[in-house]
Length: 313
Ligand code: FAD
Ligand code: NAP
Image 1 (cartoon, protein in one colour):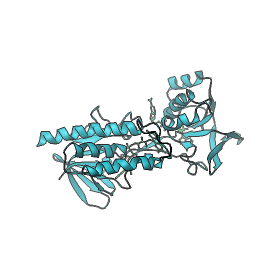
Image 2 (tube, helix red, strand yellow):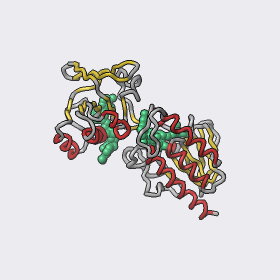
Image 3 (spheres, helix red, strand yellow):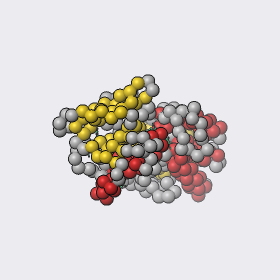
Image 4 (cartoon, helix red, strand yellow):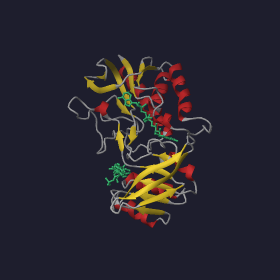
């Protein structure tokens, strides 16, 4: 029986692993289906993690030491995909894709939330090289420069407002002429003189060269007219896939409370509605979707796990 099963090996999972093992738990396993590190390993640089200010290091370099630190304190890593978590009496059963299962006294789910892709030409080729899904992470790279935002939901418009304080101009491209975002947010957008709404339009193509994105082509879906926007960063906010499959039972019902978008409802201790089950990082409600906050969540959850195990001893 594991003291704790951690599912997902991004910043939240690794930090939960560090704090549980360094805090004295002997039997903690992190199930990560790939190499540990999480989404940030896709990034060419990170400059908003406090204390880390090395421009020549990638997200992969940045996360390397996290793993070493955790394994040093005794965290075990199984490179396996988890299919499902279920509660059986007082304990949990973690079922792996291979069909094996493991019993655990507590579980911390840190499987993240992945931004959706819009599907236009060049999106994948220039992802991380001018195409971004994170204004907090990459907005500063476009200080006093123009950027284009794709999407018409709350995320797109809130991130456009954030970018408008950093960038010279923000061009919001939306495929319809009405916005899905909340009316007060739309009103705030309309009052910003450097935000320009380009409705009934989609990104036809993101183009560039080995140096990265050079510009975007925008197509009006009603007239088919093409407009070219040079020297712009492109931020894509077309929704998220919350990686919550492991929290569904065999009938597809969630084993703990989630909100309308599938984000796991937790309290300030990262406790879910199920005793002994915690959720940390981008998978939880109101996650700022940053490495620093995911790591903080992992630490908070781990401290709760330690007290839960102590109470049961
Ligand atoms: P994740 O990092 O998403 O990790 C989840 C892990 O769970 C993954 O490794 C996945 O393989 C694993 N997993 C999922 N399902 C299963 C399963 N069923 N079984 C086993 N394993 C599973 N943030 C910043 O603070 N600064 C930045 O500059 C920055 N730049 C970014 C650039 C890019 C290109 C991207 C994509 C993100 C960036 N972020 C940045 C955001 C940051 O990476 C995330 O907020 C952070 O990684 C979230 O951590 P997490 O541990 O919650 O989840
Ligand atoms: P969302 O509401 O699903 O909006 C996604 C937007 O992207 C929509 O405008 C959609 O257009 C557009 N889109 C989707 N696929 C596209 C594609 N392939 N090409 C071009 N455009 C595409 O996602 P979200 O904004 O991330 O929000 C998710 C949920 O979180 C929402 O329910 C939202 O209310 C909530 N949220 C709330 C807050 C808040 O309350 N402060 C903040 C952020 C998010 P259409 O409109 O035409 O479908």
